[in-house]
Every structure is written in C-alpha cells, then in structure tokens.
Amino acid sequence: MNRMGKMKREVGFTGRKHRNNWFDYLNYTLMILMVIITIYPLVYVLAGSFNEGIDYVRGGIYFFPRVFTTDNYVVVLNDPRLWRGYFITVSRTVIGTTSALLFTSMVAYAMSRKDLFFRRFFYWVSIFTMFFGGGLIPFFLVINMIGLYNTFWVYIIPGLYSVFNMLVFISFFRTIPEDLHEAAIMDGASEFKIYRMIILPLSKPVLSIIGLWIAVGHWNAFLDAMIFTVDENLQTLQYYLMKVVRESTMPAEGVPLPPEILNTISPETVTLAAIIVSVIPVMIFYPFIHRLATQGVVIGSLKG
Amino acid sequence: MVAGTSKAYKITKNRLQLLLMASLGFLFLIVFAYIPMFGIVLAFKQGDGYLNILDAMVNSPWAGLDNFRAFLTDRDFLNVMRNTIGLNLLQLAINFPAPIIFALLINEIRAKGFRRRVQTVANFPHFLSWVIFGGIILMLLNMDTGVVNAALIRLGFVDEAVNFGEARYFWGTIIITSLMKGIGWGSLIYVAAISGIDPTLYEAAEIDGANRFQKMRHITIPSIAGTITLFFILSVSNLLSNGFEHIWVFQNQINLSRSEVIDTYVYKHGIIGLRYSYTTAVGLFKSIVAFILLLSGHYTSKRLTGRGVF
Image: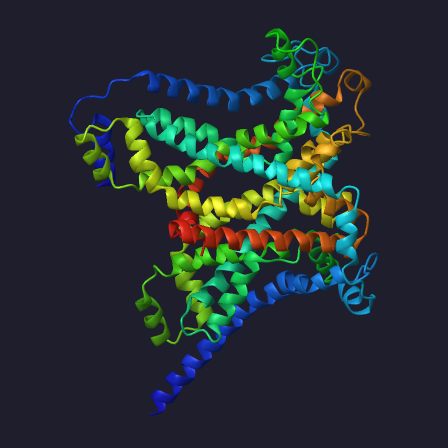
C-alpha cells in the first residue's frame, strides 16, 4: 500500500511524468559531492599506504602512489601488536556480543512476563539508571573493587546488560503470541526452557539487530582499553591505532625487519597502511551490516 | 485435586524462576549503576588517592562542598565550561538540523537506485571508529603532506600551509568531522519517519496545487516534528557531554585551550591524577545539570507541543 503511494508520488498524482527542475539538479549535485567527500579520504589513504615512505613525506600523493611499494604493509603485518590487537578485538566482539545478547534477552524475557514478582519495582529501578548515573570515577572505582581492572573481562562483563536493549527486547517479546507460553506451561516446561526453546528461536530478527549494535560498539571501542587496562597484551586494535595516530608512536617499532625496508618507510605511510588493514574487515562486512542496521533504525525508533 | 495442587505448584515454581532471571539483571544494575550512584558520596569527601571505593566512601573524612568549590574556582574551570558548552551549542545549531535537511533532500530524489547508493555511501563512516576516521582526517589535514592544505594553496585561499592542529581550528574540525561522520546515519531516522507519512496527504496537496516546497513545509516537516522534538530534547540534555573519543583523537598539546572539555578533564585529573573525590564532584555537577536540562526540556516541550520524552 505504502509502496503504491510512493509510486504514485513519483509520477505525480495527476499522472504527469515529473520533469527535473533547478532544484533537482542542485540536489543531485549536492548528493554527488557528498559521495565524493565520503569516498575520497579512503582513496587518499589507500594511495599513501602504497607509496614509498621517504618519498611520501615530500607531499603530493593525492590519488595514486608515486613510488609504488608494499613495504608499509610488510611492516604493519609484521607488527605483533597489531595481531594481538586484532585477536583481542575479535575475541571481545564475539564473546561480548554473544554473552550480552543471552544475558539481556533472558532478563528482558522475565521482565516482559506479567506474572513476575516485583515487576514494577524492577522496571523503575531499570528506567532510573537511564537518566541518572554516578559518572566515570565511581564506575572506575567499582571496576577496581570487583577485580576487573586490567583483565580481559573488563571488556565483557560491564557490557552484559543494557536497559535500553532490554526495553527493545520487551517490545519485541510482546509480539510473540501468549498461547505459545500457555501451551508450554501445560506441557510442564520451566521458564528457562520456554526462554531457550521458544523465545530465543522466535527472536532471531531482534537478536541480529541488537547483536549488530553491540558488535559494532565492541569493534570500535578504545576508551575501556585506555581507562581500564594497562597491560599491552590487553590492548585492542582501536587502542593500538589510537596510540599510533594520536601519540605518533612509530608503528612497528622494534620489529625485526631487513634494513632496506626500515630505511625507506616513514611513520606516516605505515600509519596509513595500519588504517587500511583495520578498515578492511568493516568494508567486507559492510553490505551485510548496512542492510541489517537500516532495518534496526525502525526498531530503535519504535521504542523511543 | 492432586492435579490442581501440582499445577499451582508448577506456576509458583515458574514465577520463582522468572524472579531469578530478573534478579540477575537487578544484581547487574546494583553493581554497575547503583553502587556508583552511592559512590557519589565521594564528591563530599576527601577520598583522593584511595583505590577501594568502599574504603574511600566509609573511611575518608567529610569535605562538605570543598570539592565543588575547588572546581568552580579552578583556573581551568571557565575554559573547560566554555569549550564544553560552546562545542555543544555549535553541534546543536549545526549538527542537529543537518541530518534533517539531508533527509528532506534525500526524500526529494526520485531515482530509487541512486538514492539507495547515496545512503549506502553516506552511512559508511558511522561504522568506523573515531580513531580510524579521525586518523584519516588528520592525514588529510597534515601540514606537509595533506591534500587539504595543497588544495587551499592551489585555490589561493591561503599563502602557506595552515597548521590545523592549532587551537583556533579545533572547534571547526570537530563540527565538520561530526558532520562528515554522522550526517548520513543521523538522517536515517528521519527518512524512516518521512516514509511513514500517509501518501494521501501529498496527493491532496497536489490537487490543491502545492509545489514541492509547500508540501515539504506543510506536510513533511509537521509530520516528523515529533521525532525532531524528541531528538532535540535528548541532544539538549547532553549539553555537558562531548563525545570523549571524538575529542580525544583530535586533542593535542597546542590546542588544549580550545579542546579541554569536562569529560577529558575528568579523565586526566581522575584516572591519571588519582583525584577521585574532586573528579566525582565534577562528574556529579555534570550529571545534575544534564538531568535538569532533560527535565526542563521535557516539560517545556510538553507545554508547547504536547510531546515529551517519556
């Protein structure tokens, strides 16, 4: 119905085919400009990352490499810190997303049941935390107190539960027919079993969208690594890159490489190569991510 | 009779299972939300230097409002507040309406394929971290090798390369990078809202001879006003928070006078400087102002438009 309406609008209600006027041309120009502004920086980075380091510093590499080389990538890919960062980031994304989805959806299931004891109390206790918090320092001290500081689990446990996601789950669970629950109770199923065997399998759409939000958050986070860890072995990919970008740490410092490579690279080009190496996974998954995320916007807005 | 009792027993057992599941969430909130909230008591104590929160809360001496007084009279206070609020007001004035305008423009594109491609490209930066996106921008802005300086010189806007790391360029950098990264993604919610508008409204307007600007003004914008109000109130309540990661990537030693905001200030003095009580007070100051702004935004909007956040 909606699509019909849109089609009608395209041709105009009176049936005349729409003719482009100055506004359309301006609009198309703006959009194309927008696309160029978004894509060009990636072209720039790509060109620089394939350019010889000493030559790059002379400037002028804007579209294509002038002196082509893959040395920058050799350096980056030989840096154990990058691989460790990758390993930590992938681990936290996989473990963190799975555990947060299971935990939050389980609590949400209980909160969605009308026969939950103290339901209103639980509900308001949750809502209040969305509007008021203790701030960074008390939170930091709690992390310290319960022994999460400088452990891998500081990436996982504080992210297990989110009130916002819980509310999104609840609004989805409301659409699951109550009969299913009643029938399961008749068969003597426990609530855990109902959650596991009925609710989870029926919730795939909402699980995948919330899972995507959580996973993107995990992939991109560097603040928690910066605040809650000191151990280099625990630093995430983004935190490693942050140090490279912000503190001009020479990437791949101390990596044993032949002198003919070390003498020609520059921090700039190696940084560019490091950026490309960490963007690649996002690019590969982007078509999938984008489709899912666009559906998610509607779900997220329903809640608001 | 026997069947009846066992069913009642079953139902009670199930209700207890539900209680257990919900309690896990409750327990989580106690640890990660409510204990920190009670930790606010630190703001009124001299707990600087303690590592254990309970120890600091229970055993440190009271300080009254000293920590707040110290912040208000700190030589960085005015600077930090100016940067925090100034940057946010700019964001509110520029980065808030931009996605709405972008959504309206997107909506005017009739070629569906082109429209989808523009959206796909425009949303991409949203999925990059601030480290990567900021890192790319810093490369583009580089004094010696960056393309931006080369273009400015070639076009004759400047005579010699500009150092974009300087303090006076900081706010501009933040606003523009925010736009570049967020405009596409930010517009999605409005595009979704626009596509939910009843098409018969447009048909009726066309019969009345309305042109596209009149339709935009009298149908599209009023129809998405609710969404706009909601997001506006939420943005206002964030007046004292700047995206930490965003600021952090672009902050350097020479632009501190324009780039130090409450969040970075708390991090430096609290986490690095171990002044826990002092920075808790700063954080509480921030939370209270944000809470007041949210509530006043909510009630003002309720009075004016009949719509609020909750």
